[in-house]
Length: 218
Image (cartoon, rainbow, N blue to C red; front, side, top):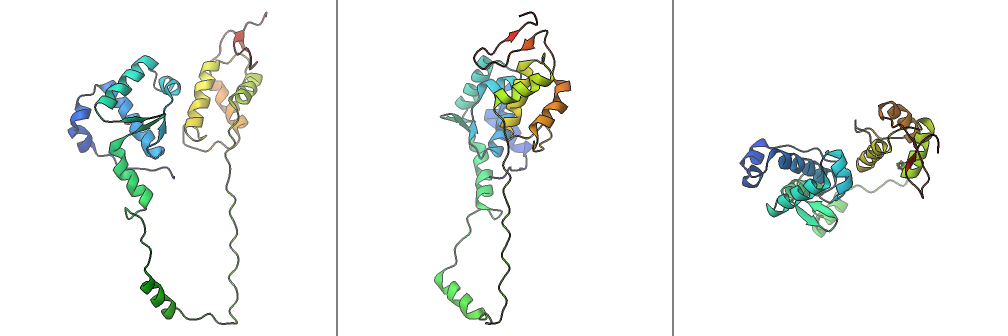
């Protein structure tokens, strides 16, 4: 499903009794979940670790807010996904097309009338040129370990937590950067991003078995 731009209605938001009961922190998180619902066809995968880092909140407080939103019936937790009832009406319009519903099929009488009205093709008519098939581009998302190894080879003392947060944010955004641009060459993107990744006093160990950091003397 294509990503959807949607109209925001401040009056509906302000008149909602459930929203009125939320504090500013709870409202902010609910607003973020609405955006994710519109981008993910109301099937947002729950990822508490990424959300806690992205929104700078502890997992304990994050779970408490999600429970509050659930009790107020603003969200529904369906297995490993989050569903927002207030988004469903607009998403149904998107799924059904710009006219707000499924296209109806013509009945048999309409088809018969169409055949009679259509002129028969001339035997000398040239065949229609074959349409060229457009190759669908595939997004190349590297494994995190490969992502980490390449970054460390260019900046050995980078902060792995900051790098992981950047990687997760790109993955969550369908491998697009903060400007919503598709990342085509992730190695080049890392080189441009590394100056903004803070450093530690220790070198990063990219061993998949012992994924810790160690000092230069070890």
